[in-house]
Length: 97
Image (cartoon, rainbow, N blue to C red; front, side):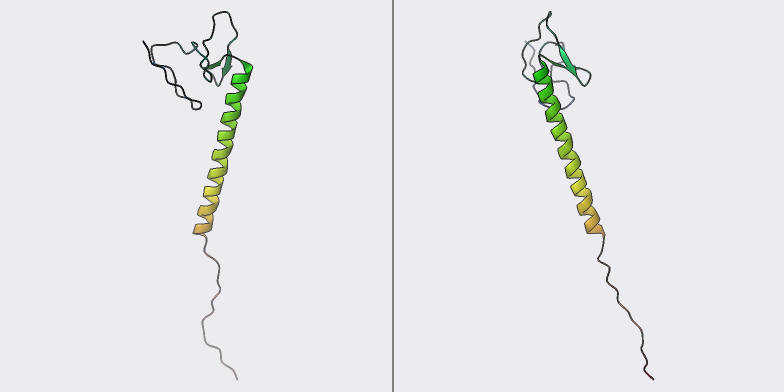
């Protein structure tokens, strides 16, 4: 009996190598019938319904937005660490006549 792994996100194959990728919905794992519609997303990710596919799309978009925001925050904090406050100091001799 083949063991299957289930992931909500990622592009990794969540099925073992000996099973067919169109066997079950990627999100809810409902078996996909031979005479039923299959809704595809990102090339080779099958879903049993528009709703399951949409849920995965929204999850992926939220994850991507989170990554963008965290990378932006990291760049901003690195920029702040690298920049030194500009302080002007003058040295020299002043003569009064």
